[in-house]
Each structure stands twice: as C-alpha cells, then as structure tokens.
Image 1 (tube, helix red, strand yellow):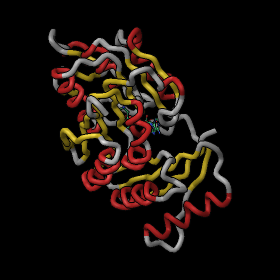
Image 2: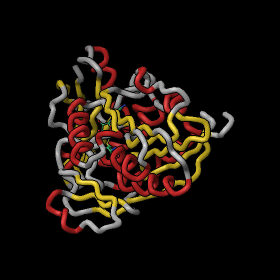
Image 3: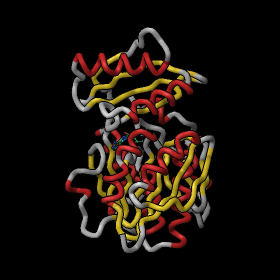
Length: 294
Ligand SMILES: C[S@@+](CC[C@H](N)C(=O)[O-])C[C@H]1O[C@@H](n2cnc3c(N)ncnc32)[C@H](O)[C@@H]1O
C-alpha cells in the first residue's frame, strides 16, 4: 500500500526540497508532489510504495531538516488516502481554450463552438481540468505537434483526469496508453474517456513509471507526454527515452523555470534534442525529439 510523507512548506522550500530529493539516490525514484494548499502555503509530499521503515523515515527527516535549515522537520507519515488529489482538482471551473481544445465542465456545454475539440471534465479527485499552467502547456504542445507530425501511437504518463490523453485521441485519432500511479485517477480517467467518446482510443494502466510490460510496444510510441514533477522526470529520463519511437516527440511539463536546465540536461544525456521550451504561469513545458536513426 502506498504511503505518503508530507510537510507544510513555502513554495521556495517545496522546490528546494523537491530538488534535493531528486538529487539523492535514496529518494530520486520516489514520486514527489508540491501542492499549493492555500495562497502562499504549500505542501510537499513524498510517495513511498510501501510503509516507510524507521531508517527511511529518519533519512527523509534528516534530509528535509538539512535542506530547509531547520533543527527538525515535522513530517507526517500516513497511508495514502483516496482524497489526496482533491485539492489539486479545485483549480477553477471556468472553461479553458488552448489551440483547438476547449476544456469545460458540464455546465458550459452551451459555449462549445462547431470547430472546437471540446473535452468535458468535471473537477473531481484527479488532477487535470485544463486550468493549470502545466496542463495548458501540454495541450498547446499537443496541438502544435498534431499540425506537423503523424502519430500512430501515444503514451500519457501521469494521466490524472486523462485530459491530455483525451486531447490526443480527439485531435490525432490515435490509440493512447494512459497511465497513473494513483488507482483513483485511473478510475476517473476511464470515466472521462467514456464521457468524451474517447474510450475506444484509450487504454489505462495503473503503474509507477513505465517499466511494466504494457509499455513495451514494438517500435515504441511516436508521442509521449508526461506532466509530473521535475524530480520524477529526471529519474524517468532513461525509461521514457526507451519508450519513445525513433523520430518520436516527447512533451514534458511539471517543472519550474529554475528546474528547466536540470531536466533538459537529463534528457540531453539520453540523446533527446530540445525543440522548444514554453512557460505558462511559471511552469515550463519542454518539447523534445528523438533522432530518426538513434
Ligand atoms: C500534474 S498531474 C497531471 C495530470 C494530467 N496529465 C494533466 O496534465 O493535467 C500528475 C499526475 O501524475 C501522476 N504521477 C505522479 N508520479 C507518477 C509516476 N511516477 N508514474 C505515473 N504517474 C505518476 C499523479 O498521480 C498525477 O495524477
């Protein structure tokens, strides 16, 4: 059973600690999440695949205290509650337009125009109503890639509400594998895929990272999207590169400006070329390409 370790922090401390965790071999592979729970109040959460042992707890507490310059870091350890992503979904209910996509709630069905690719998402217990700078950045990148590339198969890692997977399915009429570490997100993703008529294109899988055999498709994925935080993105660089087809496109988001170089360097080391970098509300979205012959 997944356990969480969380502590209240400022935004700067959340980012500092997320960086330190990403640089520490003991925690680099753990999922780390920074959430603004109220204006200027953040919570940093580390996910453990099982109940953390006493030494693991002590190591995390020592790392947090040293990174934040505190005598002691008051970390709360608890089994994962199903409602943990709720706060992330309450991002706002106004419709969001990005490229040809219109992401909206049920109450805004009437504003959909003939040419829109409309994605109906209710604020629920999975991240991704389109409002966050990371989601909007990925939608814009998907819209751009759709204009120039032929995509036969796509992968959405950390699908949350499945907003990006649905966008890919609608825009590109292509099969999408949508994965998430959180079983509740996977249930919500499948429901949203049905609601939006995208279910025939979507397959969901509950997994941390992309190591399971479901991800090992012959030839790889022509498009991979991953909107998760900088630490996990750095840790996942070799695995995501393996899942990307030759000449494939990789879209990454969930990183802040000061983390861009570290993430870009991790993917450069995997021979992926940075094609462009966009910023929305301080959140960076990277578009990278794998060489045709690599
Ligand atoms: C920021 S949300 C992105 C949701 C949606 N794709 C979007 O763009 O709005 C990140 C999602 O990634 C999932 N996640 C975090 N770490 C993961 C990992 N290592 N493997 C798979 N999913 C992960 C979380 O459960 C969460 O649903």
